[in-house]
Length: 123
Image 1 (cartoon, rainbow, N blue to C red):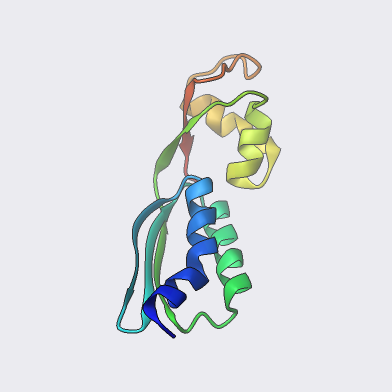
Image 2: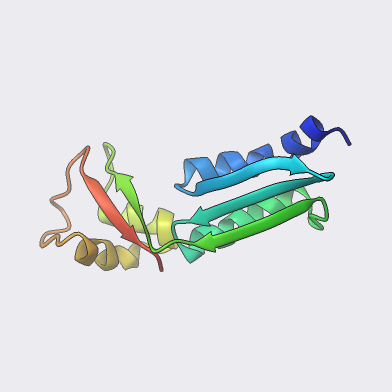
């Protein structure tokens, strides 16, 4: 398979990572394999990335990977957001919103504002 075709094969994984706050250090083809190194915001999202990889190729024998979990990430609040839905997207459960509230010294979880930057601690 040509290098660009191989990279295109795993592009949906890189797109998922970009949409969900991963820091991608490497995404290129080397020696006939895609090299993908990234830092996930949470363990939950790291596991979701593996689900995306397995959708592309259950064996992923043409992928050299290093996916780790960082200590925290920044998230900018969008219209319609609340701590519960932010928690669900990062941790897989809306009930983990207290981690985000504590990390940001938020006394009232209903008082976040559009444009506010929140620290999302790794789970």
